[in-house]
Amino acid sequence: MNSPQPNPHRLNRRHFLRVGATGATGVALAAGLGGLTASAFAEANEIPRLPRRRYGRTGLQISALVGATDWSADVIPLAVKAGVNYWHKSQRWNKENFPAAIRSQPRESYHLEITVDRVGGDHMHGHIDEEQHYQFVKNAVARSGVGYYDVFKFHFGYHSVAEAKAEPGVVRAFERLQKEGLVKHLAISQHHYNNIGGDMAFEILNYLMDHSPFEAAQFFYTYGDRKETQDLIALAKQKDFGTIAMKTMGGVGRAASDKKFQALLAEPKFTGSTPGTAMVKWLMNNPNLTAAVIATKSFDQLLENVSAVKAATLGLNDRHALDLLAGYNKGLTCLLCSDCVTSCPEHIGIADIFRYERYALDYHELDRARAEYAALTKNGTACVACGDCLPNCSADINILAKLKQVHNLLG
Image (cartoon, rainbow, N blue to C red; front, top):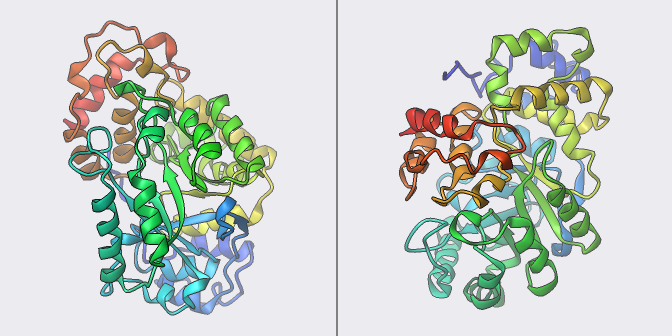
């Protein structure tokens, strides 16, 4: 299940050749192709540069690929050279571990995001607390020594439009911090909450675009996603509301270790593409989307993603690869649309459970997946096998059976 992963600090021959073909200098090819670290490679070569897009009302020009603090410390210099200038969840860095490749740049040249969670519980059961949010950010600024965070992001978001209207604590904490120069812009990372009687992400974001000081949002988005999400992204562009896609790579990780899938991918019509690179190109070909945050566990993956963004054109081979992945995912991989939850009499967070399965099978983060699953108030064992959810699943998943499988994996 947990197949061996590439060493994130090494670049192998295959990826030297790939990067060389997409713009790296001949130094890489002449380097003996053995054991060069990411840092050394970044120093020695011209790396494809990522385009930048306006992050909505913030006015920030951010890289098309968003960086994350869980990337390998040795990969980050390559990301910086590729032009990654926006860093997700950067409160995880302090003065001791803040990457030198980023800190050595002028402070105004890179953008740091701090995510603020509910207190007194998880994202479904915790609450909003203005003072605690304020103190959290203030302490993070002092601990990190960064001076300020460019984006204050409300992590996991509101439960409903009604809560967004009635609970001003997040906005007030932001406004206090903004006056002190500790944060500059306000954004949200929004999930669906129909399993606890709340609203869908697109409903909440449609409200916030017109009735709040929020300037941008991050949300689930992948190939084959529901029309409402597509419409949301288009509307956000019209209203100058920034958008970052997350959880984009459903099924890509498990397909990469599936021998039958890889045998199909070897057919000539897929030559030059993979589901991962095709997905990146597909995201970048949406002119309404600002950027995407993509789980990146190795040097190889980063080079592949940067090269895909730079290539830009979504070819027929890429479309074939996406269709192959969609067929593979049918009945297997949840798209996280949450439609099934609406009809569940037990109000089980089915999409959350299947998201944790992604962490285990696609990202190879089994410990994280088990920890998240253990924190659920209702897990897969709460299913009464009524089957009410099944007609609502656009991915044709046997939800009853899959809940048992995921419980066996993570429980």
